[in-house]
Length: 390
Image (cartoon, rainbow, N blue to C red; front, side, top):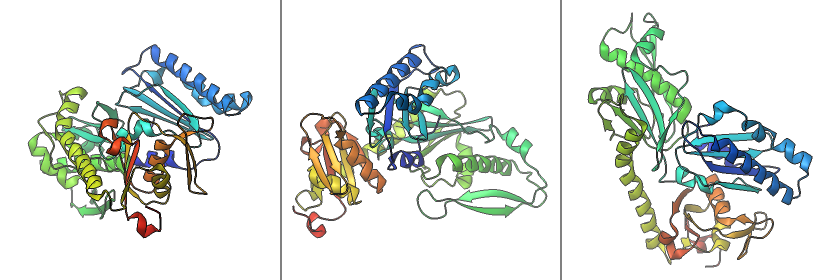
């Protein structure tokens, strides 16, 4: 099961040859008998949709073979969180255990359906908590709904383990730091002579090893990272930290006896207002730029602009769909009042193109959307400067 990182998102956003199947479902932490049964129903629904798309039965069975096999893997179903997202394409199966209740949705099309994931991947959706003490370390991925554990395989789980694995006669210890730019990492090496004797140096070594493990997990990430630790550990960990989005504000006190639920409540109290402030600022920018040619709620304008990389910020209505088709070669949008065969949700299409080109996407309740539209965009340049009609 994969951690849903920005790198994984870019994998899902890639253009593909052949059908893309997206499956979403709620799950139960620790597993429940209902989960594999619901999975069976979801895969059966995917078969039906592929059949309606004209795919032959033998090809459908071969295409979904790995998904069917998953139903029998009892260990997998015991390792669930609150939601499961799965994506199937030729030579691809991606599974994501998520700390968020997901709706039961099955979709097929030219692109993966990423809209249910947008609250986790947009500018206001996700964070990490590093719960750290001398006796243990946990990395948690969180949203406004909850947190779930992230595997830090190969990373020391305590100070004692880190020191046991360390050769005190080695001349160099690893230390990493940002190398200039978000998501960038670099490394320096420091000589320590015959060994590390001071307790702070022992802790620094331990934290450097943890930071080295985080590099593999958080590479390319932009989500904030909070440290949950007693006060005297924070300045030492700050010296070891190389993650560019590490927050100065953290959770004070020992995390050893705190449950995931308690850690989530404390973390959301810190990051929730930050996310709300960033989103409010983005909405204010849309209002300020209205009438300048740098905003639009017209799908015929904003979807081609998104495909060209000209959408700076996109707002997507959570509860609305906009059915139709987008011809990328002709840069033409065809909208339909009701879903027709071969249609896609154009709000999903717009989000895919925006994210592919590095734009920011926010998911809003329909009542908060500009002009009540399913989509709204802020462009990097006014329409007139692109030679487009207003």
